[in-house]
Image (cartoon, rainbow, N blue to C red):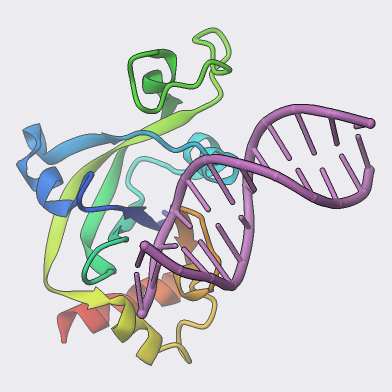
Length: 155
DNA sequence: GCCAACGTTGGC
DNA sequence: GCCAACGTTGGC
């Protein structure tokens, strides 16, 4: 089982939206970056756990835990001309973009904020979300990084 | 294949 | 709103 960090803007879709969704599940759609597409399509597996990270908000950070419940499948929002994420180069017969389904697991009592992650940069020096200029909305974490952040959340 | 221009991301 | 950093596009 792999571990991930998945970023979203809470003004668009945050962990509270996921908690309110039917069966506390949702598609993770709208990814339009090839590196992230490859992870969605080729690497993420049912049962993988991910941190739900809020970006572009008052307090960026990790707000909880989610689980992959459906492996990569074509992102149909790319086929719909009326949709924000429409992409004419993605065809149903040969889709460019993929998504997974996720399920709510846990919301932290207090988020592990970006500031807090930075305090622990000695233990989290490879964490991509701490690297300046990183633009990937989904990044892999090592088991050690995952466990360390879980202990931060429990404090 | 190069690279300038442009659009997007995301913290501040 | 600003701006650094990066990905993508398109002319050549």
